[in-house]
Length: 504
Image 1 (cartoon, one colour):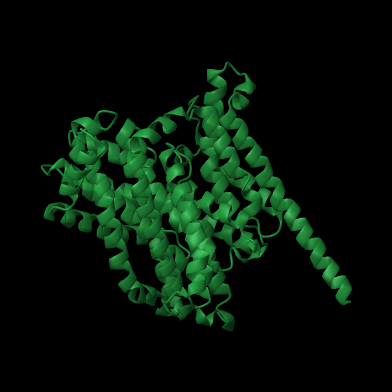
Image 2 (cartoon, rainbow, N blue to C red):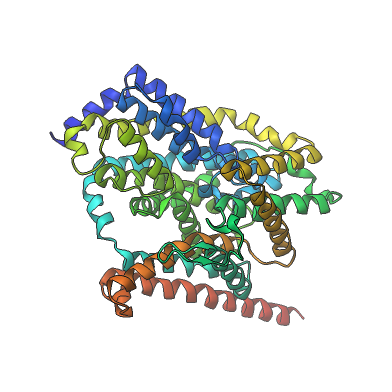
């Protein structure tokens, strides 16, 4: 059966009344879950697996896919309005989305996020339809040495995430690396930096760190600055209308990050989180005015939102074509496939074309539903900022505590949340950026695993890391991406000093 015939079968599944209904249920549920810190798509899909017993496999999987990309779409809301990322893939969204909400442009920020997410998701679905079988071969060709080089490239972006001081960024990144090593060593089984505490054997969950460094740190900041009149416009929603200038600024990031996010999503293990960070960093590096990033930049908001939604669709390439989960969420999706009697892999397209193409076709409908449902609701969603500040602070704290407790039902994680909240406030007080900490924590574990797998396969020979053109190319880009921002910052400082000396 050809791809076009299979696609027609998929369209019949997705555009049937059952398909449309369950896509709608999936995206609505995913959007609501994504808005709540702690209740990510992994938990939602795991809960829905028992519900799908007896359902048609195509319909059930279409609904679960809707939950997945709906959660990524909706996760931006809490990041923008409350600086409390709903899921890990929307952490980078808060870098510029929350500053926009602070200056009274919450409606505009949510509209930019919704449109960028729609474009990224739609473009990636088209790419998924056209290149899924071919890209599966690319995903397989990436071994541990190439992954190590890719993670190394991501880490060199730390200089771009600094707020002027590269040294401070490197310090916080080092702390992120240290925290990433806590727990049981996956290769040797030995415990590392647990200090005899069994609660640390599984390491520290990403959500504990993200909500601590961002949400609780923001709560501390708002409490201490409660009498600051400059923060009073945080309750303003602002207009939802985007100007021609806004669309012009969004056009470049949406085009570039739709492709980059999709490609990163295709690689098993990368996922929406890494795609959003790399998308943000890429736009900052090529921007003519990088200083505007982190202060409410339209490009800084559009880039990660486009990339993370594009990566969501890309993650289905290794899952559907190879049976390899590309992220934690698609790993749970793999379990759902098996429970429903479907074996994803190279034969899925030929044996069950209605499932393969049905999921892809449903994404078109899902992205349209997400845009149509979310844009009209923005004025009502943004009214969260109208809540009195004491009540809002209390709600953010409660949702953060509930979200963290729901992960492991451990009070120890709540103590860790408070510790990272205090650490986040101190970092903010002394101008240490939190983003490098998060990036190093995310990439640290994967980078260590790829390095050790590479060395094990090569008998300890370090040359395996530079044994192919892909790795060498990534290292060259890494070195340039680290050096160029430093040189640019020095030139900007010199020009500022010269201007000051001329003025005096």
